[in-house]
Image (cartoon, rainbow, N blue to C red; front, side, top):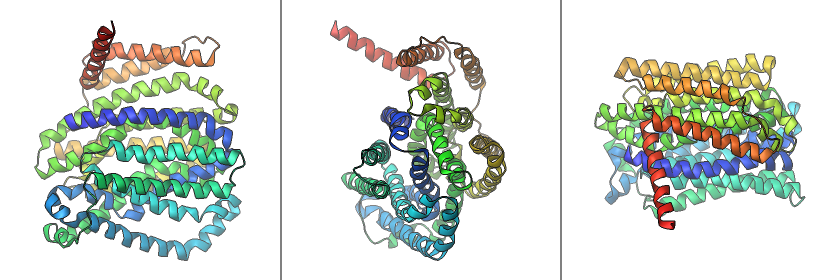
Amino acid sequence: MGVIKRQGVKYSLMAYFGAFIGMVNTLYFYPKFLSEEELGLVKFLIETASLAAPLLLIGAPNIAIKFFPALKDSASGNHGFLSFLLTYAGIAFLFFALILFFSYPAISDYYAARDPLFEAYFYALFFICALYGLSTLIQRYTHNFRRIVIPTLIHEYSIKIGTPLIAGLYFFGAISLDGVVQGLILIFVFDLLAQLIYLHRLGGLVLRPFQGVVRIVNWKKIVEFGTFGLLGSLGFSMIFYLDAFMVGTFYSLSGLGIFAIAAAIANVMNIPFKAFNKIGPPLISEAWEKNDQETINNLYKRSSTVLLTSGIIVFTLVWVNLQSLYDFMPNGDVYRSGQWVVFILGMSRLIDLATGLNASIIGYSRYFKFNFYSMGVLAVANIFLNLWLIPIFGINGAALATLISFLLFNLTRYLFIYYRFKMQPFGWHSLGLLLSGILLLFAFEYLPLSGNLFLDIVWRTSFVGLIFLMIILFTPWSPDIKKLSLDLLGKIRDKVKRIK
């Protein structure tokens, strides 16, 4: 847990700063620089790349984590494992390019009938998907060296800083909409190059013949794990990213723009999960290699408690400040129609956080095929839920489809882990956290407003944070966050004493 704590804290601090940048972009720059339709196009390209990356890679990121412990050997360049992964991904990209080449006319005709922007810029999707996929692969390989902060910082900050910059250039007339799309491609080129440079600095960018890979690890196991990993990751991506794709495809680009703003607000809750989900899988993979179920169970329970606590706090802070955030936005009344999307997606994120690292525990065990079966069923269910609910409830319907999918997804995994490994992450502390969060969420709704936008955000955030800090410090419900809080308060106290 020490590695997770160090890397998790570093990542979370940088990620929350990145989230601050993202929120400023979401609440001010994007609505100011782009119309709802133009914002919908940008989000469609990025979110579809997130959805398509697992298909492009055919499970390569999962292979990078699963088999690295068996191939780890600095003297031989890890037996050429990186060369193997890049070759594996290159074959997959070629296959994908052929499929896209032959299906492009039909795809183009479909989107042209819905919106001319789709047809005009659909070409960019292949380049963004390929660059996004390669960057993801290099990131996951770098995680084997217990480094998550810099690779993630490169990826997220490239998008969060680069996208508003090109949107601003478009707003001030320096570039056309063509330039915006080409600028997005350049952002992902920079992301990939920076990932490679960082891996080189770690000494991990070693390209050698990979005969040793198939000698040490049976190639059939690699292909089998990659195939099932592909289908499981694809299902995972469909649960997490399908909503934006479906809104853009079956509703409208302007609706996607509103949905994207709401989803970006709700996704602030995911920051601690991203930290755990980047450093946790290599540790879980190594523990399964040693059959160390005690370590896995400990990670399961503690990740659940930390993520549930942080999720409740962040969701409450978002919800009590939501109307002020919309007041801050240019064209805020247009985007305010997405407020219930924020609430529904927030609930879905909270369910996912509460169940901790369940996906990794199954995915790196001998029952990894279950990822495929469960993800496949849930992905199909998510598609049909979107097709059913979007025509009835619009963007709220897409959010509801995600909430139902998350509930089924995590319930299925919870039951499987309990049945197979006799592990479950919850206790009375989980119930105490949940009930206190629900009570405080409704109580904070009645906090008075001063009439000053920034003062309201500051005082509400401070008051809510203080109440939750007291709960953490004076209850035994979240010991890891309690220890972290006490350490931070101690450092602040020591600095104050030195100043005096």
